[in-house]
Image: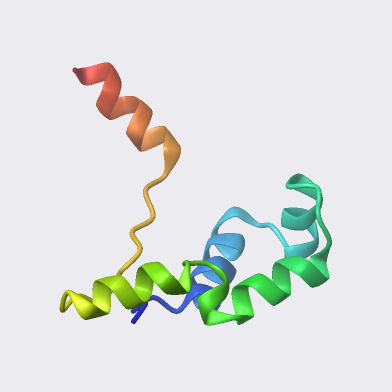
Length: 78
């Protein structure tokens, strides 16, 4: 099972960045309707076969979001 609430996560990140779903859709060259459909459909983000495999192995899935700039800073420190 995917533990994240994808819809809430995306909407929160949009608010944090001052973007709407329309802005996000335009940025990735798709429609607001498609963005909305992807975030509302829980199994639309993670492949169902992968979810079933991990469940069979006794695991749930949690997605972790890491801001790209923080990754660049980590790499620069190395």
